[in-house]
Image 1: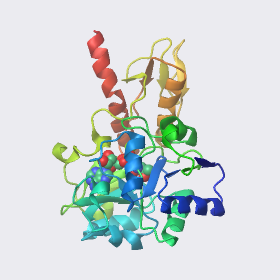
Image 2: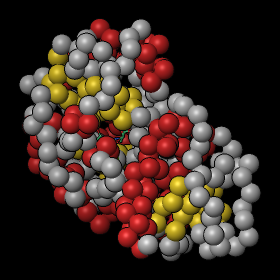
Image 3: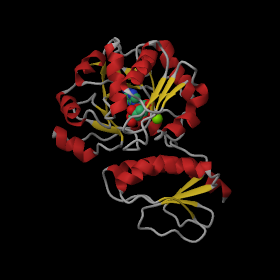
Length: 328
Ligand code: TXA
Ligand code: MG
């Protein structure tokens, strides 16, 4: 695999060419790192599934560089979806829309809809633009981690997760630390009103204000195919406990205002909710790197991004709760 630590325009062109030739390119976005393939190339897309160890009926998000490409992939987008796209793209939002003929079953997991996103990250946008100049239509990219594991928010985490599955012809683009740190908000736009399938930095209030519509409730059945919505996800190896007092030897991740009890290993002390999101996944990884058995997280309060963080840490803690319950 070729690693590009300083992705200049020329080097990004090489990576775009590799994508067009059917190779994989891991790239930064403002949310998390993605593992990209030409979304029209079935063989390349299959490699994403095998690198991640992900079931093939779980759909992938198609990344494009501009709203003008939306109608290549999606048809009959409702007016509120157009409003959302104009207001929040490029940005941390994925819209689920009725698929066009271009969005094949190997992208949508056989569903009649497709997830689309325009990321807000200069390297990602440059890669997509170059890829499109070469005749590409969109880049399928899940988070660049093994299925069920923590999403990478820096390039070293990409190697840890999927490095061994990449070949010499694949690329990894370094874009530093991801600004937001949790995955995009996913909004289902298949019904008369939007509904949120995954919380993220675009919050329910932002969606309601932008569309002037009330969000529809989530029906659990609908989420079966969304791995990010399985109860257990984003899991490190360490046991994750939420909102308890940490004990000596535990890793601890809490807001800056909370003190570290004696003997406790402070992993991170974010000063606000944005930093909390940005540092969350790397904190979970560093707990594993330090070989800690347990990490205690104090949940951030409030709505908006804090809600997205609580959603992720609950899932990160899900397996631990089962383990801990069995021990007692
Ligand atoms: O921030 C993000 O969204 C990152 C970056 C790389 O763009 N991508 C990402 O992809 O998180 P992934 O595959 O790790 O998570 C996408 C989630 C999955 O749970 C997938 O099942 C769901 O979105 N999804 C994708 N297309 C869908 C569709 N058509 N209908 C329902 N869920 C869909
Ligand atoms: Mg993921």
